[in-house]
Length: 114
Length: 113
Image (cartoon, rainbow over all chains, first blue to last red; front, side, top):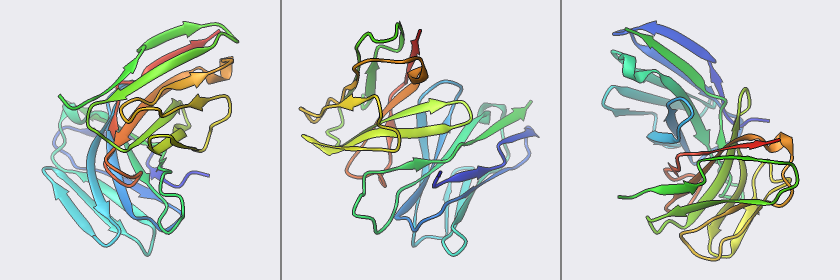
C-alpha cells in the first residue's frame, strides 16, 4: 500500500486564493518531501522537512509536519496561474535497514484559474 | 548545468523486443532510482542503487533489470517488454539516500504494442 496518500485528489481555485494539500503516511520517516510536476514533465523538488521539524517555509510555500498524526500539509499562498500542476509528497521509511525506498503519494492536481 | 538526462524521451516498440532506457547524472550522486508513473497509481519505484554495483528492488521490479557499473549511469533494461509496461518512466538521483532531495530526469514515454 502507498506510504503517502494525498488529499484532495484535485483542487480548483481562483488566482490569489490559498491552496492547501494534505499528505498522510503510515510508518515513521526520516524526511518528508514535496514535489511539483507540470503535466507530463519531470518532478521538481519544492521543500524537504525533517522528522524533527514542525514547520518550514520557502517563499509562498509553507509545509507543516505532524509526526504524531503521520501527516503533512503544503500551503501555497496567493496562488498564481503558474502554480497549476500536480503536487506529490514523498517519504522514506525511518528505522528500516533499507534506506533506499522512497514512496510517493498519488498526488493532488491543482488548477489555478486566472 | 547540473542535470539528469534520459534517452530516449519517447519510444514506441513491440512486445518482446528488448530495449534500454539510459539515465545519466552529472552531479556525482551516489543514489539513483527509476520510477514509473501511471494514471491513478502515482509514481512507483522500480529499482534503486545506493552506489556503484549496488542495486535493489523497489515496489514494482518485475519485468525490469538495472545495472550500475559507473556512478553516473543507471540504465533501465526491459528484456521482453509487454503492453503493461507502457508508462511514463523517470530516473532520479540524489546525494546519498532516498531521504535526500531527488533530482529527476525529464521522463521517457514508452509505448509497448
